[in-house]
Length: 134
Image 1 (cartoon, one colour):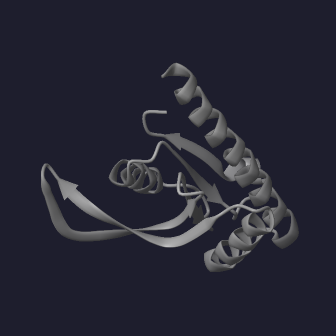
Image 2 (cartoon, rainbow, N blue to C red):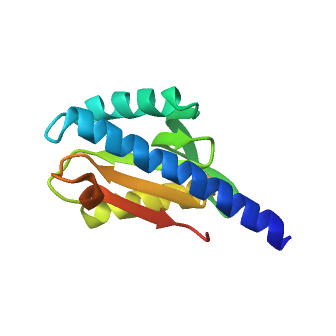
């Protein structure tokens, strides 16, 4: 069981490296200050060029106890069906951005997510990794 868990962690960490290097490439090429939607399209293209599956605007239903409630949320990007990526182009992250990603991680039962803000001089200032029981 432990080796299976470690294999899953290793796989997620490898995909994470590709996500981060892809984001750096997009930021290097496009620079800060553009619309969020521009970064979304470029990021999807960059990840796909590296052989990574990108699902966009993935619906997630809210469940409470044994009930499925009549509320849907949309995840910006789901990478390889495992990692949630929320892209932003804001002056700085707000607490609501982290709460949004953590909510999506829990609702979708995913372990790892990234907040990526492209509106920064250096992309490392705009990267935040958030985990859910990882």
